[in-house]
Amino acid sequence: MLEEVVLAGFGGQGVMSMGQLLAYAGMLEDKHVAWIPSYGPEMRGGTANCSVTISTEPISSPIITEPGTAIVLNKPSLDKFAPLVKPGGILLINSSLIDPGYFRPGIKIFEIPANDLALEMGNTRVANMVLLGAFIELTSAVSIDSVIESLKKVLPEYRHNLIPLNRAALEKGQQIAQNQ
Amino acid sequence: MAKVLMKGNEALGEAAVRAGCRFFFGYPITPQSELPHYLAQRLPEVGGLFLQAESEVAAINMVYGAAGAGARVMTSSSSVGISLKMEGISYIAGAELPCVIVNVVRGGPGLGGIQPAQSDYFQAVKGGGHGDYHLLVLAPASVQEMVDLMAKAFDLADKYRNPVMVLADGILGQMMEPVEFPAEILQELPAKPWATDGARGRGPNLINSLYLEPEKLEEHNHRLFEKYRQMQEQETMAENYHTDDAEVVVAAYGSTARIAKAAVDMARKEGIKAGLFRPVTLYPFPTEEINQACAKAKQVLAVEMSMGQMIEDVKLSLNCRLPVSFYGRVGGMVPSTRAVYNEISALAQKGGEQA
Image 1 (cartoon, rainbow over the protein chains, first blue to last red):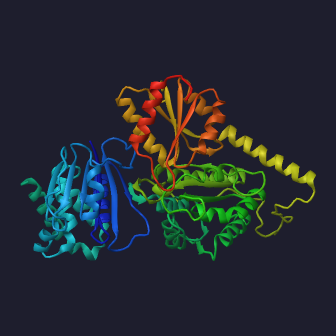
Image 2: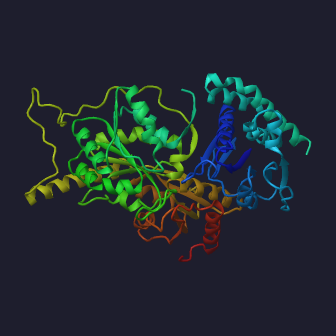
Image 3: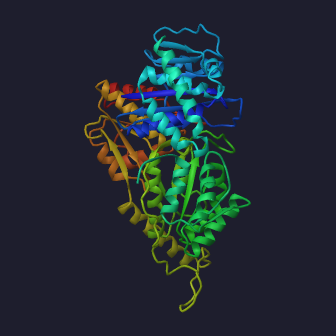
């Protein structure tokens, strides 16, 4: 099993932390993982992306040029990464911020209104978790439980009250992806 | 100890602490700033000292002083900053002092950019500053190897009384991978009877790189080169990947070697006999090892994030016995796996013809 994912959006949408959680969860499952951030003169509101590789075999190259999955949270990220997805790969679109209707033959496209769903749950900041839940449903790269375990390790104790909300967001994403 | 997920820059910092390093002098620069950031917090916890100097020039001279006093000491920077440190590095090599210098390379020349590159190869392996000298240069290709080589770097520096450079790049510095550290923090450091740590009960020690008599300076240069000869004999390290029957051997180091490895995997799937030779020591260059790796080779391909620097050592090592081609990206651009695969595939079709 080899999953090569690119996650992209505006700075502040939780793209980097979503990628780190994914990598952390893979590590907890004893898989080989790597996480590479884009870095540059970037700031809140600018674009941010990271690449995550999860594999049962040692990872030859952690540098992803043809992702199996791209998770895009805003329009500039769609423009940049949708054309790079491998034939047969998956494109997960945050349709709350990106107009629907993007099409490319030969890849599987899922539109998830992540911000709207997160808002319904009372906190737009878990929009990234909704998308992560959908990704997990579609690829089985890691389990939701491993992501929750990772959250427990990454979040300071006084933030653990947010874990149930994050779990609910992950499960919401899972459920939406199931039905598409 | 359980594995932790860590950035390459931070992992270098923790590995240095566990290797007994207690002094860091540096000046921030992208893409290595997580390393001083980490040590600023970590060194005081183990009774060490972190100091952000007023400039790179000041920092390297503080390293010179601490190394002379017998401390395990390091500095880190990226390309531009390493150039500023070169005068001091030449002094440290001339005065035969051990220290570790990390260069997380970014694109150049000049201020260049902040994205990953390997264009400081010449500077690293040829000495870099003035005079006849060499650094011992180690090139990790994963976060775990950054940890392993950091410990080795301090040991080699002490063994040869020579500065050791850990040459990484922006990808390795910024990337997170799971790592395992040695469980114990090294407490016992090797004795340094030559150090200028106070002449109580012994004659004074002198640390200097000034030899006004040419006879003495020539002798000193010969002594340095005897050390480099010993390094060549004893310290070369390299990794071979599917080279046993390889007809096309890719030579690459650092993060580029990871890309080349994936390209070799791709080529093998297509039935092409490709392999990867990865030098881990860039100076001394693993000359014997590359010749063994290329025993069945008809074509060699050097892949670098530069306009072609390591390729010179590849050609020299192979003594022009095999055609050596080049593929590279520069300025912070990173070669894609497919582009490297395409080069391999084209060379495989050529067979033994001259490139």
